[in-house]
Length: 267
Picture 1 (tube, helix red, strand yellow):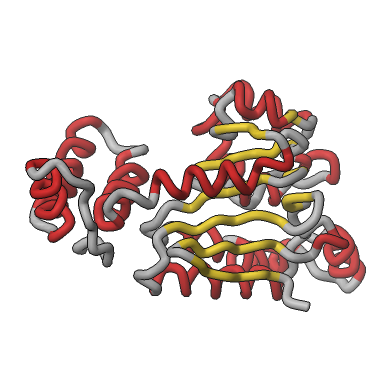
Picture 2 (cartoon, one colour; picture 1 turned 60 degrees about the horizontal axis):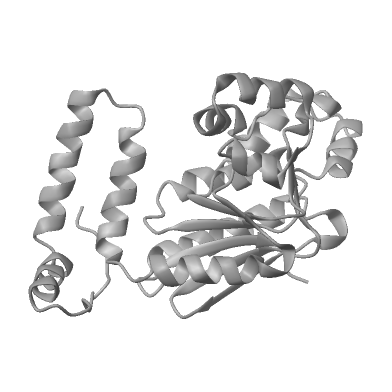
């Protein structure tokens, strides 16, 4: 059985973590399949958005602790762990940096440790009411090595991020929405419908504009004001000469819905 389910329909690619019997804890094989799916999404202009979710009742419990224990018994040390993180786990966020399309995470259940960090990598997160979140590394003597220590304070602020990292306590879906960890919480049986509604609304716009806008958004996060405005000028200038921009202006003047052609944003 494949550890990743990957399908595309109607311009949307869905990646499903598929080890429900193990809480969707990821393995080396799963990470490799995951990266391949993301790269297919990057290369395929017909894919306008990507959804990540988990099979079963748990979104993702992070790394497979049983395999970690076996590796420790086999004598693997810090250097081996470092190679595993940089050569496998970190391939997901690094690949996502190349994805110029909306990446929506549908959190169907508990997201813990590196599983929570993988959820944080989404552009938008929608959570089922039964979902829970925990930076649980501290409870097994680990620290966040999968990007959570960088992403979490940017979403919820430093004090709350440190509280979550130092206690490993669970945060409910409702609390996650309140602190800005997720965009929206819906009843468990309405998660798919809520994601479909978001996709329907977000896919109306120009794929070129979304790609350029996403690049600018993330690039500006850590820039000072002058550099941020300079980048905005470059991005706007590039967008203004695309066929989608010409179609958008014509449609506005003619009072009709635009027919965007899609494709890639100019480099």
